[in-house]
Image (tube, rainbow, N blue to C red; front, side, top):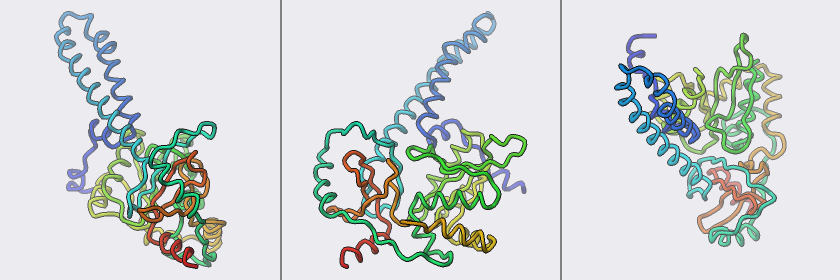
Length: 325
């Protein structure tokens, strides 16, 4: 590692970690500061007359940091809750939402009532294409978000690495955990984030992954996105031990697998309906629906589960052909 690289790389501070991590991280930091102000500082400095002046300075600082982290936690929580709303037209973002209990039907909002006619009268499944015989960029691009995650996880397993996907719902910025430490097989050594978007991933999500790595004391991170990354995202990843895998690189990695393994992974990837998105809330296959904003993906159990996802360009094309046919 050269000196220039060492100089350019910097570890994220506590404020940056709080701003880019799940709201529970900043909430924990706030709680720790409160405990420090009420318990740790008095125990360490209160019993010694010479150090009482230090305690008088540290205690207000601890309360101030508790307030800052508490505000950040509230802000992050509000933003994560806002992600369950309807995605904007043209957005390629895949959003996960917390599962909605089947035992309770919440009251319908004005948006729900406006969408119900479209959901009940114009819903139709997407036509699944014929199963491909070889890996191509088009196959990778057409994989729905959950199947893409599962394929990435299975790829690492084929390479002899123990890999585990996270459950549906809020994932805390981690889709796959990798375990490669023979001395401590239960310790996660790398985390993977996957985004089957139709556009390049920006630096914001790469920063969030770095924050999760710091919080979980993981030294290595991978971000897998078929349609690549922005220049800012690549620059930040290069300075923070994050490997970016776009569609071109992933295809090359697949082609280097033994022929039998490559064919088995393709069969796994394209089994059943491999292009219709999985509902991030309840795990059901979503339905192609129409609204005034255009087509989108909605959960078939709406309004019990209100998860919605934007359509990628290829999905819109297939859906349009299916309607016209």
